[in-house]
Length: 481
Image (cartoon, rainbow, N blue to C red; front, top):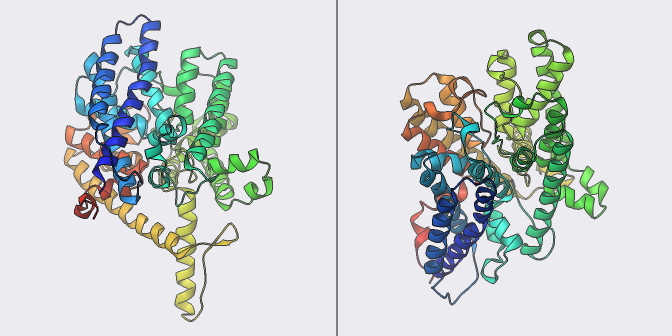
């Protein structure tokens, strides 16, 4: 382990978060909330600690896989801790465990909350809460790579450790340029949604925070009733469209940008993603139609909730806790599936689902004909054995983490639906679960132990297991020879 390069990189990340916290500071001053001191104190702590961490001068500046994973895991934990301090200092979330749960839920774009009166929060903290979604959607380190590039941080290993999906590749030769391209696309879509929501008569502050939450597929709203509070069909349509877009692999948008339309449209993952959404909407619409006023209302509610859940955004326009069991099971299944790899969504990812399905089919055929050699193909290209193997290993570890988490959360002695769905929704970065953690409820009912477990689940789910697990491997911390 090259401790000096890890320390130096972490120091610069602390400075980056200090700079980002200037935004809610300005919001606080604009709305005359008299909370500027909580931001200045947090910024001062980050700046000072960052300066100390930046003192070591590494002889070797290359970041290898081990350093990349450690930097990503530590940065998400520590930046979440410091990001939670404004809530604690303000007294609006006095418990550090609750504040960490809320901020980790923001950075990991989960959207699960412990707040019972969201509308009673100060504007600047609501802005910071939503902005954590926007930063976390593409990745904290991706943001730094894109806008604050440093020589020490030009490493593909950081990008591989942070960008969700079965695999990640560079769009261009330089990692920093790739990060910048992705963030520019991300920012343009975010601005487009803000404008669209303003055209739907949503207030400016609400439009900005809602767009941040949609872009990061996070789901934090500034209203207690989420998107349902606006009671606006145009707003629902805009949010549905942009949630759908942010759940697509951003590499495909780049291909469209450089006019490689055929290559983008050949994406097997894209068509599977759209197909799953279409089937789920159709089934749920027919299932809930008898419960609502009209078929059109059923279609609109089903469409919004299916897209919100599969993209792991977690916005709500209907209490799906009261829907028939078939619809609830479909939504739980969509939580597992998630969005496309390389998007801001969570879950297993559609790409992994395709690989796992094809791996199962291959093994069945091999059982019938052992001598037959059959390769897994994705987008008409042969998939590397390492990728298929890594996907299977990831799935096993993912299910193991879920099983252990359910056992720990069950200590609360809540009903099975609450216990099971709370873990599933957190590890898949969705937000609302069912029963006591359903769409019109929150996670206040959970004990401190459960909140810690679920906070770790959110981090493990967002970073896709490996970076967090590597922290507990003793050989990770051995010095480089």
